[in-house]
Image (tube, rainbow, N blue to C red; front, side):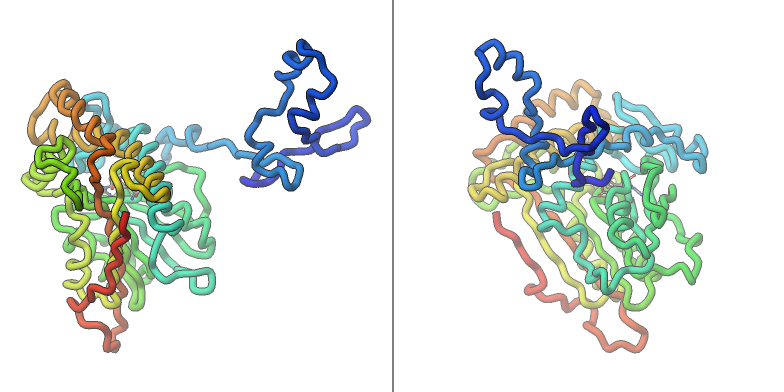
Length: 397
Ligand SMILES: C[S@@+](CC[C@H](N)C(=O)[O-])C[C@H]1O[C@@H](n2cnc3c(N)ncnc32)[C@H](O)[C@@H]1O
């Protein structure tokens, strides 16, 4: 049943269907003794479903999630070398190109990514993308690089049923019950893209939250995307700058969260795939020749410190995301590169977790969205490198 549709009507003794009665508590309890009232409470429809759609007198149906049933890596098309995941410090990591990406792929991380997807959509005012596509002007072929759980690709597949959506990732963690126009492939984006035929060019290439994935995001992603887009096609990167920032003097230089991310940034930079690369997409897009480049920068409060309700709620969600993900972002860099033990890392995380939830510190991270269009061959477009400051929108907390 589709979300938002109503519960089935109740069957009566004579077999006729009647709408389920919708009474308030007072009406249900009228004329009953104290004991009868208590006994009757168990029949009272406490469900919040009832309140959701009081106008129609019907309850809203909340569809159950089918993903846990199918998210068991039962990909028939992938070999065991792809799903034979590395287990380390209680987390699992991708098997294909084992060791090349430092962050886990287990169900805990997948759940965090699904939650983060919702937060990012809130952050972007309900949008999933900024490329100028619409139902009147739908994309034809979409590529989602580093698709993770595939949630973005799946939602685009629903939104644009006539488009073909391909998602690629090192891990085969995507569900199998997806729209028919959505496909996932295990692939290392840093390899040559020789499996894409010329006629398979894309008109939209997207990548999101791939911080820590790339040695050289221009060579690994942006140049290849430019080459593989058809003229007029759009590239869009949505990425977090991991650094912990603050605009007033509430964050001390020795803030444990700030120091922790600086340490992870140093470790990952020394190993070749820096975590704090979110602010590098725009320059890379300019250098490879994209035009109409636009950059949006959102501030994401670390917790509920902002006064304004919209940012407070967003901050609270980001706090939950940070608390959920801090182990995942720590274990690979500090375990593999700094050779810290699990106990040592957990000791560090005690103070880091407290700092994440400290609302006296007005800390935030930056989320970047960079859009660029591949010019037509004979187009006199915006020359590379002239993106103006007006193109940058800083959303204040
Ligand atoms: C933090 S997740 C983001 C997932 C998704 N884009 C989202 O926003 O929900 C980053 C993903 O990039 C994938 N990844 C890392 N390095 C990659 C590579 N070289 N080629 C393809 N995917 C890669 C990881 O396996 C992981 O699933």
